[in-house]
Every structure is written in C-alpha cells, then in structure tokens.
Length: 163
Image 1 (cartoon, rainbow, N blue to C red):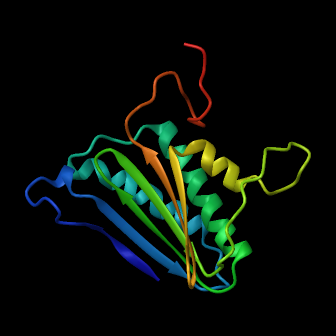
Image 2: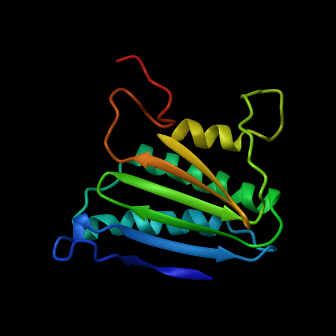
C-alpha cells in the first residue's frame, strides 16, 4: 500500500518551506526495492514544482542507493511487513525504513572478498547521519542526506576528491 505524495501545510503560503512526504508499506512477500526507488524519483522530481531547487544528480544517486539498501535489508532480514517514508524539506532528504525485527543492525567493515553485507556500510557512506531506533515491535532506520552541497565531492558523498 502506498500513501500518495503529499505536501504538508506546516507553513501555508510558502510551498518551498513545507516538507514533501511519501509513505509506503509492503507485505512480507513483496519485492519493494524497485517501488521504493520509483517513489524516491517521483518525490525528487516533484520538488521543483513546489518552488524548490532541483536535487543535484549525485545526491539523487546516493539517495537511490540508500533507499535500495535499506528496503532490501528490511525484506531480507526481518519477518513480516516493512515500510518506508520519505521527507524532502528545504535542506534535507530523510529516508526512514521500518521493519518488524528488533535486532539492531551491525555495520560491517568493507571487505572486497565478502559477498554481501555491505549495504548498511554504503548507507552510512552516502548519508550525513544514520539513526537506528529500536522499538518494541521492530526498528526504524533513518538516513539523513543534506541538500546543501558539499565542496569537492561527487557521487558517494563520503569520498572527497582532490580539489
């Protein structure tokens, strides 16, 4: 089930100040990563129609990676349904994925010889901040990506290039 893209009326009369939000939930036998990426692209393309600046292409790629990894992890490692909310505000994109597992996820060090297990490390690499909130009925992982450009970065924003 998807919650339609909507704009909240936190600051009526100034569309660029009100956050855009989107939400979706999936059953346990769904394969939602492609749906999540599609929803993210729709949210990001809707932003300029509300007076916001377009999200830079490198940030959009980083956000798609974060969405894919978080949703895929929720489907693979937790029983039951999962869901996602996206929020685009004036200075930040927030991606929150929830699932039914109460186990805290572990960030594994990068290892080119290991197959799999790199997703959460990648999410931390492309995000400015990642917050894990354990709940009685599962967990919620929120990735915060700043819309304020960082100097001398491209793509995986955590990797600085010589200027």
